[in-house]
Image (cartoon, rainbow, N blue to C red):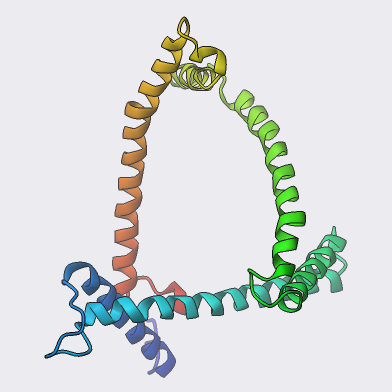
Length: 225
C-alpha cells in the first residue's frame, strides 16, 4: 500500500499560490475590469491584476533566467572537469557568456540596451546568426530531398504541392504569362494550408486547456517534484 506523505508546508504553499494565481488570471478574462472610481479608488480585482501580474511575470522571468544561467554554468563546468568529449566548446561557451555579461554591464551603461551589449549583438551575434541561417538553407534542401520522395500517394501529393509553392515564389512566375502558378500557390496557402494550420492550432489550444486543467486541479504535479 502506498504511504500517504505527511504535511509539507512548502508543497501546500506552492499549490495555493498556483491555484490563486490561476483563478486571478481566469477572472481577468471573464470579468469586466473597472479602473479607479470615487467609490472604489483601487479599482476592481481584474484591473489590479492587470497591473500587478505583468510585474510578477517579469520577476519570475528574471529568476528563471538566473536559474537557467546557474544550471548552464553547472553543466558545462562539470563537462570541463570530467574532460568529456568536445569539452573545449564548453569553455568557449562559458567564456563568451562571461565576457558578454561583463561588457553589457560595464561598457556604455548596463542592460541589454547598453553600448557594449549593442556592439556585441550587431557585430558578433547577427553575423553568426546570418551564417547559421545560410547553412540552414542547405540542410533544409537536403532534408526535403530525402523526405519528399513519391513512394506513396500521400507523399506524391505532398511533393507536388511543395513544388508548386516553391516555384510559385520564383520571380519568373510573377510574369503575366506564367502568373497562373503564382495564383495557384496563393490559393493553396490561403485555403488548404490555412485550414490545416487552424486545425493544428485548435488541437494545440485544446491540449493547452487540458494541461492547464490538470495543473490547476492538482492532477499533474510534476512542477513540484
